[in-house]
Image (tube, rainbow, N blue to C red):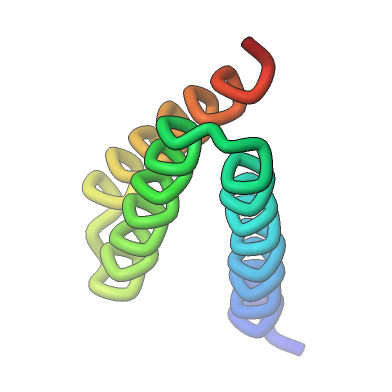
Amino acid sequence: MASNDFEKYAVAVIIVFGALIIGGLMAATLALGHRNGFLYALGGATAAWISGNALLLDRPRIYALFVGIAAVMLIASTITLVI
């Protein structure tokens, strides 16, 4: 297999597990009644979705920016569950 094939599979695995983690975080915040945590998780999921589009359009700086935004929002969502 070419290196490009491995990259495609790696991106697919990252997307699938990322969606599972974000979806699980959204479900946990809904189940525990943390509205702000749900909204942070939803914002993180949206930022991650936008970063995926930036990756497809070959915009690495925009991709990095939105991955950072998604990470911060998902950390904030996790903090609302802990506190």
